[in-house]
Figure 1 (spheres, rainbow, N blue to C red):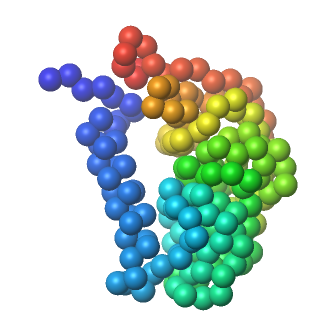
Figure 2 (cartoon, rainbow, N blue to C red):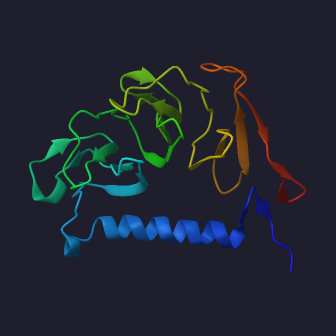
Length: 192
């Protein structure tokens, strides 16, 4: 039985990870435990920061956490550990946020189908300040939708454009801007 490997993850591991994340997204909307972001649209991405705050992304324009007041949040929001809205975090994407990943330095990567984040042009991928959510100088200007982002232990960023494309790796040779080259990690039908 052959298995295709992506780093240390097997297909089964990726499927389990997707199932766990999907379950977390479903659980996050369960009123049984009192935690309910109450978004007015789909929540497609959930990530938990090291401090326990919860990032949600998707196709919504407002949230009303735990039955509180309705607050405008365009496709991305952050909730405090008690489920209330973190009012200081408001990146505001103009279209769908499909994936969220947190880097080891706390910066937040988002991907999806958008052209603007925080009033700045960002095509389908952006990196956000961990405190305010403002986009930083990272701007690879992806020319296609981004559906999955993963951060490796060496801080290299992997993205998946769609089910028809494999992961690509963003390499950075400098601390802020880097060379922003991407290379496919797919060869002969298997990720390498």
